[in-house]
Image (cartoon, rainbow, N blue to C red; front, side):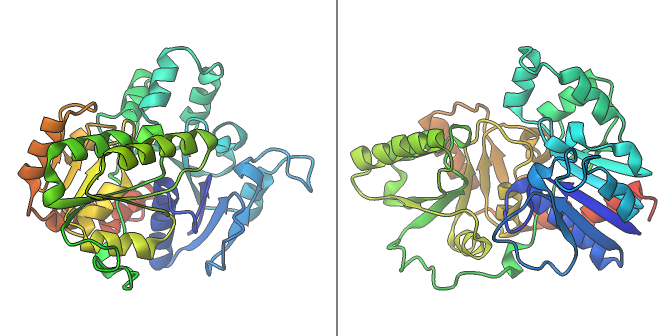
Length: 363
């Protein structure tokens, strides 16, 4: 089959949605299908060994060299099926004519913040977006019990649940020169990575760690960078907390989240993964940590409680606004656990790929 994949961003950007898109696309390629990706431009993108069509802002209207719009790429390429990975505000939701292609699969993401805006009446063209979503042949959510599921249920939109998946960190490329010695670390590591922003909630994690008394056993390592001016302001708040109160230099803050080899290496030398987020879907970072075998702790965001809550290899906290006692108890509860078997059972690309193939009647 000839399959198209639409994503706002794509590799070398390595956010959750773009890596989900890359994983599905390349799985179908490995099964012998022809794949093409439609995404926004990235100056750092190199040859992917399959076609990547770049359009401005992944907007299918106002093609620069064709005044009739850009939806014609869908009919020109004659895709047998089209996968669209989007959130409610993705340009593709309103600009892409999903009826051009015979079979369309929308993989929809929607976090707590957007769900709140919906119920506060802040999305003025919401009905138009809902009608556009309903035109897809299949809707997929990779969460359960999350805002996206509530949104779909409330609008009588039927959907399939196919859990998110991750690459296998154990067999991925690693930055071997990054070692605990090189980082000046002699203790065990609690690790978190992600861009600095209020939604990621690093400040609460840092504060709980400093107040927990765990600094004699652990270092807290944060890998990330701010992007926007608001993010930079939040980063400075986090940095100020470290400067004022981290007297033992037990919090390490390193830049970067767009280097898979670095992330792989950090996961391989860490002991616990902690996700303190205020809003998520089903976070890819947790699944990557599980593939590395790390015990994990997460706030009860998005699809985490329903999808991961019954697993014994980690802990879903009771409250997003966790206190130091909850932090300390959670660390003690998961110490020395291994999550690799859970990942192998539930969150591999092979398992998810077969479910997506069933939607295309390829089983």
